[in-house]
Length: 28
Image (tube, rainbow, N blue to C red):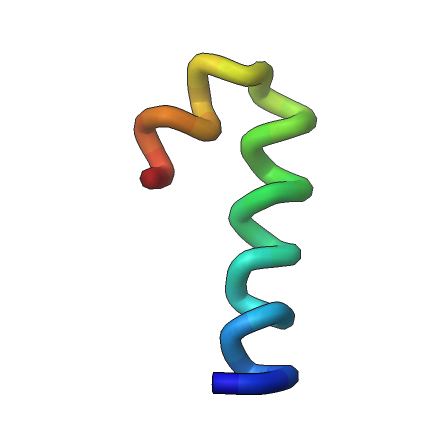
């Protein structure tokens, strides 16, 4: 937990935002 988790989440969040909200659900 910490920066590592935030970093990983940030990457997925950024990718999901680029692909769309639907992608966010898939990443989850």
